[in-house]
Image (cartoon, rainbow, N blue to C red; front, top):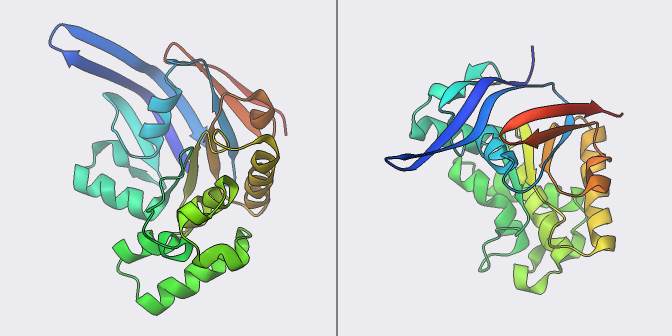
Length: 228
């Protein structure tokens, strides 16, 4: 069975009574376990809307989103929040770390909201910090870390709930070229170990590192290119 499926999915925004903006129309995508997928398209094409729907941050106007065998497109806001907390890992361009917390504490945040015992939270966060190469920097706060180190914290935090899917929105957008390559090598390693990763990017060289590219234009899927 597929890990996730978007079936005839559309999203329409109505900012005013007489205004209708079609962000996505009749989108069909199948995501298998272990897929390493890039979503690419021009500004305004619908790729961010697509990522929001995949991350259960929004729900479709029409169609269905099946995640892990569950139709999440019909869930309540509270149920969607629970799915996000347990099944989705988010990595953002701007890191979105809590500045008052250390790297380890930031990694623990999703586990805290799941009610995991403090000792187990710390064990998992330390293990993840090592896995992403933070090492002795794990006790530092975000403003004491480089951009690459902050993104490593964000990746470890996204992994803390052992999600079905990792969603990354322009994860190297705020990094210099060398640091970006280091972070992409970390994604490559996670993919090689079986993680399912979906990444929005505008950079063709980033897209080419993945297994396939979904190209979006005017709210529709215009191509899916497999190259690995």
